[in-house]
Amino acid sequence: MKNAEDLKKIVKEKYGEIALQSKEQNEASCCGATGCSTVDYAIFADNYSELEGYNADADLGLGCGVPTEFAQIKKGDTVVDLGSGAGNDCFVARALTGETGKVIGVDMTEAMIAKARVNADKLSFNNVEFRQGEIEDLPIAANRADVVISNCVLNLVPDKKKAFAETYRVLKPGGHFSISDVVLVGELPKGLVQASEMYAGCVSGAIQKEHYLQIIKKAGFENITVQKEKVVQVPDEILRDYLTEDGIKQFRESNTGIYSITVYGDKPAESNCCAPGSGCC
Image (cartoon, rainbow, N blue to C red; front, side, top):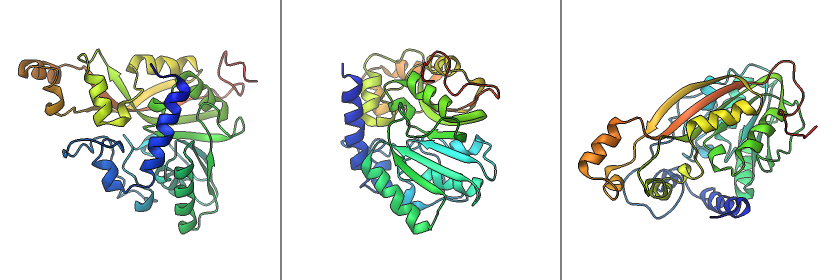
């Protein structure tokens, strides 16, 4: 069992490599990981190409949803993107918040920050910035953001309680988040989770959906809503290593599996800066 620091090191190294790859390479190689079969497993990422603010250079094909779709971003808002990568969601958010708003992307991988800054410079944006840091210890002041977004990143964070406590801290009272992520529903067949991690790095660190939602609730958020949900289809060629044909059929017909969800939550309008019980104030 790897500890939190070992996991962070692995993720940082992996996404440092991903930052140097193209979108096509990432989509064809297990959510950015290497060593998969030739089957196209680009089943997590949603299509951004028709969205205002989309920039192809910033799209590495690593998301599992479109958090800005439900984020209710308004002109002039300050938006924080957790795990901002090459800046894809930040630039879409910037189109919504406009020139009077502010977008701050946070990523722990130096190569991603460098790539995102180059992309922002190409677009001549003066209200989008990228800061290197960890989601469990955000380099952002309390009560700063109107909206927090994230796309397929929090599942990779070892301490999700702390991650959501930090999300709560940086949001203004009355602010909210919209986060896309990967979760599990039910007990997957033995060995399948590990195999899925190999074919789709995004599954690494995924926890049960109900546990995920409970963490959010305990962080102090209200009006928690699953805005969108879709099952991630694990290819039969992987399932056959663990299940019979009848077993695959039963698995397909059950609600058990890997899901991509987009979740919303409000920080109460009357609130301290920190999550309940965090002791950070």
